[in-house]
Length: 242
Image 1 (cartoon, rainbow, N blue to C red):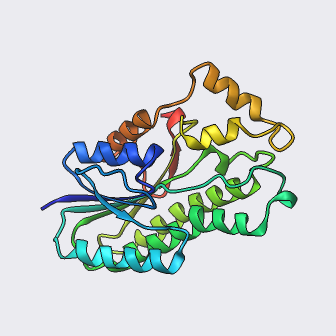
Image 2 (image 1 turned 135 degrees about the vertical axis):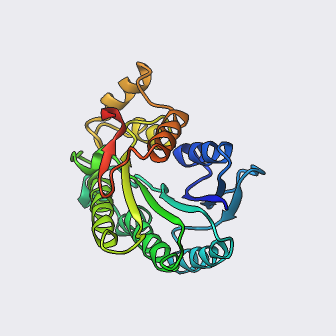
């Protein structure tokens, strides 16, 4: 019986580091991302998560396939996300707001619901890990959409855990705030003008002073916390406090 992990946004940054880490630990890793890395150790599916109907239909079909494998455990890691345009809310186009909420909140909600429904009759261990952000608890000028979407993700984690706690062999849900990580999102932040993001110098200094976590460090932490059962059902933890 196999251990399976499904990772959204598994081709870059934290998602790719997670995919490589779990693969190295003999998990079967399904990476769902718009781009493909060509890593033969992963089962990569090119999927546009901003195309809601196609993405949810494809995810549903994938879980049907996984169910036939009679797995020992299945873990969904909702990792894919976007910062979106950085500016005060009144300056952000509606379509950019829609894209950020869709990727950061709607897709994790929909995927988690499909995951729970499709695996409800399976005796395997079922887990959902949501990659959140410190921005879920701290407002930043220019990040209204991102902060809001991550706060919603944390509440989703807590609610799923509460709902499923009343069900025999229900899904366990966990949230992780990885801290400030050296990814493309950080590059976008540092390149934003102070007119649109007044905290930009803080992030420039973090990079300059080599205070950013690497994606590999975050992936190792997530794996160790999950497999050693140190995560608490329904809670979102910050790696900086572990």
